[in-house]
Image 1 (spheres, helix red, strand yellow):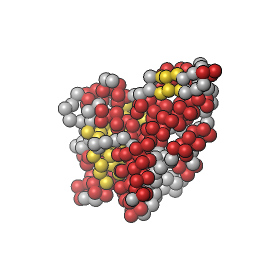
Image 2 (cartoon, helix red, strand yellow):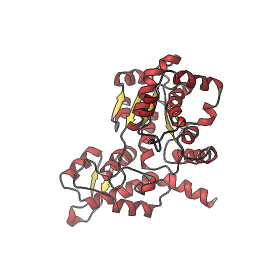
Image 3 (cartoon, one colour):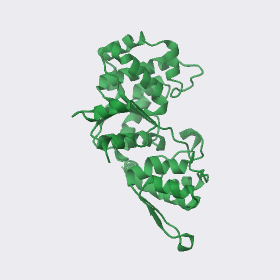
Image 4 (cartoon, helix red, strand yellow):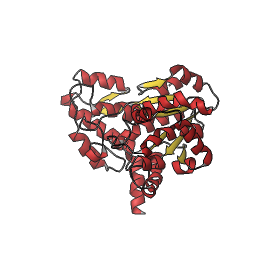
Length: 318
């Protein structure tokens, strides 16, 4: 696949497309995504992890920021708790398929005088209202935000400078923070990054994905747990806003390349699809039953997540 098409697939926005094409022509190009350590890696995280895998294949040096200090500022736990989770999340991200990336712990990057001075300098550029708006999609309990949560987006801007990256990957909920970076990083002599935004996928029940709601598949789920969850998942006749269709689009086809629908001959027999578009069209036309689609989805996820689950089990056995 053409490097540009590889980076652009399954995204909702690239800011800007021209800058991405120019960056792809560089002999050295760096991209990062940040993750707050806050529990198990699940399908929501895997959307951006898969995009980082695409960008690595397109020639980018990939950096994963395990943002323990950001998680602390965003009220996700004590610094000790999130630091411990960061090491666990790193191992899971590698196990799920992102090999050869550079991992950086937030507190190793951010607690130095130059970094902090850049944070203070940029804090003079950004109004309190703008900082709060940028956190609306990513902040916890934003009805009564803390000062720490207003520092969060400014630190994320400085991360881009400190990591010396050409591009930043994030869900579309990161857009406001990324636009702050593009607008203000020039004040500290840094070129604005290309921003690659992925969609926010639905939970298995068709509602907002949340570990606390139990509507996610995580890397810690066994094969049987994955099959049970997918069997119960919401799967309307339509392809729009269909979580099962989204899983095929963002997780199964990018990783496996093809899918086989297995069914008895009296229901049409087995059928293989070598592209997401062909499967989506067949389901929309009623050529594939919802239960057959779910069964194929479950088996695809089991295959994609098997290395990470095996890693978790080996840790428990050890």
